[in-house]
Length: 258
Length: 158
Image (cartoon, rainbow over all chains, first blue to last red; front, side):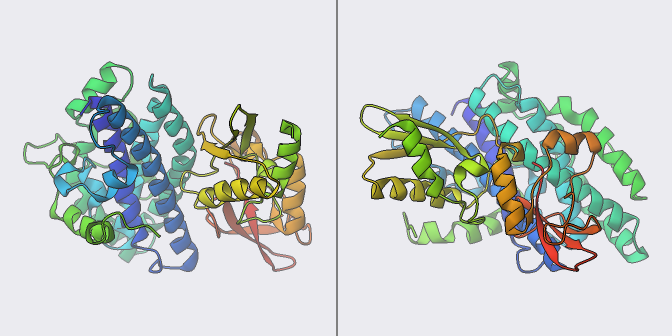
C-alpha cells in the first residue's frame, strides 16, 4: 500500500475508534445534556472517519485497478485488529467520565494541531477533509478543556479521579509524537504531517489547562521500546473487543444493508 | 427547463431536522449544472457526520423526478467547508420565526471570543443562559430564557 493510503487509513482509524468508544456513552452519560454532547462528538468523529475511508478507498482503487474494488465499509468492517493503524490511546476503555474526558482532551488537542497542519497538505482532497473537520475539532477541544478544569479543580473525589486518569493514560501519550514510516514518507512529500513537529505545541496547549485545573503537568516522556505502536498495527487487547462489537453484523451477514 | 427554474424547484427540499429551511437557505446547495445527459446537483455537508445528507440527496432526486427532471446525480463536496455564514439572511429570519436563535457571523464570534445568541427568539429578552453547548443536533446549542423561562435552541456559529 502506498504510504499516503496508509496515512489516510491511520487518520480514519483514529477517528472511527474514538468515535465508537464515545458512542458507548450514548444513553449512559452522567446527565442528559452531556450524553448528547459526547454522542454528537462521536458523530463528528465517525463522519470524519467516513470521509477519510472514502478517500483511502479511492486512492487504493486507483493504484490497483486490477484488484477487486475496496469500499469505505470494507475498510471499517472487514479488517482485523492487526490491520488497524489507530493510536493505542483512542482504544483505551472509557473508565469513568474523567478518564473519557482526559482521553478526549489529549486527543482533540493533538488532532487539532494535526488538522491545522494538514490544511496545507499538497494533497487537496486531504486538505479539504482537514479544513472541514477542524471546525468540529475546535469545539471538541473547547468542551473537553472546560471539563478538565471543572473536574480537576472540583471536589476531592473528582480531583483524585483525574489524577488516576492521568496515570492510566500516561503510557499512551508518547506514541502520539513518534512518527510511523508512512507519516515520515508523507511528511517528506508535503502531504502528511510529522507528529514530532507537533509535540512542543501540544505540551504548550495542554499543560496550562492542566495547571488551571490544579492538576500536575503531563510529563514529557521518551517512548519506551516496549510501548505498543498502534500506528503499525500493534494494539492492546481492547481493540479486538471493540471490533467484535462493531463488525459483528457485517461479519455475520456479509454485505448486509438496511 | 433552465438552471434558475431547477434552483427554484429545489426550494422545496428542506433540511429534515429544521423543516423551515430549504437547502438554499441553509447554504448547502452549492451548484446546479445542466450537463448533456444529466442534471448534476452539488451539495456540501454542514457537519462531517450529518446523518441528514443521505436523506437530502434522495429528496433532491425525488423532487426533481416529480417535475419530470432527470436523470439527476447528486455529488458532495467538502471544500470550501460550510460554515454558519453560508446561511442566508432569509434563512436566519426563518430560523428565528421557527424559535431557533440564528447564529451570529463567525468572524464576530471569533473576535468576541464567545458564541451565543443575541436574544431569546420567543420573547426577545436578552436575559438568557447556556444549558448545554450541544443540543438536539450537532449544529445547535441549548439555551434558556431567564425571563419567559422557555428553553430554546441556538444555531451555533460554526
